Length: 451
Image 1 (spheres, rainbow, N blue to C red):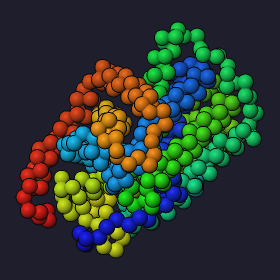
Image 2 (tube, rainbow, N blue to C red):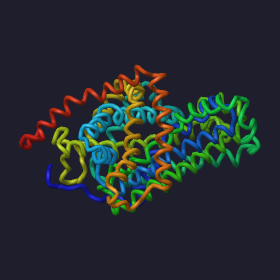
Image 3 (spheres, helix red, strand yellow):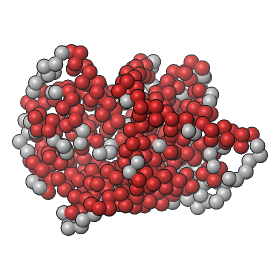
């Protein structure tokens, strides 16, 4: 290992865009439309929910595009928080949460989902792996950890392949039923806006949007590898905008398929809506095909996560607020291999222990709070640093970030009211890191040492 090596700019426009698309499209688009339909009560409101949630998530994505174009540094959100709030503690708390809770927990969740949907695929070929889901999840994490440790070019190429595969397969899931099943476009507007009062309708849509917003998350992934993107001032904003628009279009198209090929009653009662739609088109084989599509989609997200989250931990260590060995760049691969391996190991422990479900439930408030701080950073830096070069500026400023922040305030308040214990535990997980922050702060004040 060598401390003098620098990260290599191995990602171009294509890789940056596939990182955005691959980081957003996971498993939820294949599953949650039924939950949304049950909450809102009509096809029209389902579409309104997906559209409004997409616009809000897009507003946040545009804010990250501006910040990353102005500060194209490894760590993304970590860097934005440090610059906007002049606080190493705030950025440390974010990176600590990513390393020991949200980031590693999310990797475990996606790996378990991938392994779960691999079960019916292999069962079709008479291989029974149902008892080994956790172990399969760890194998997936290990394989992609090693691959990303071998260099950002390998990780980027893998992301290109996986994203192309998942988008192609998602299009098949969307288009095959439209061709083979009796499509009834009138179903898309049946029931109008439902029979509830305006207040109830707004509350139901608000609750449903929580599910949708999670489905749109991931546009900021590319900001965390900014130093490894060629011409980041141009390529990152383009990747975020183009990638998000691709996802937005695919999500709406998928919902058109779901609700034009199934009655709304069936949509609401379906536990695996994409599988049920494909079963109508292809028979029993449709469920297996859909399971394979979801498996590929989950693996694509998993690779994007392992390309993304370790860079935050690497940036923290490079600033001297974590073990210095984690800031080492591999001499051969020019990748932050130690950080990638650390994140992979912690995620594997979560996957084996099953604690990832609780961790993500606890940390939901905290992660969205940090996203809000990052969006607010756009406004803060516009006021405090008007001369900061901004190759890209948010469309509709200041209404774009303000709209996101207002809706997010309602969401965060709702979590505090409805899940106060989970919120307190999540905040506690972050506060556990504070003593370590002061420890490394003192280390920074002393002569550098390899820990």
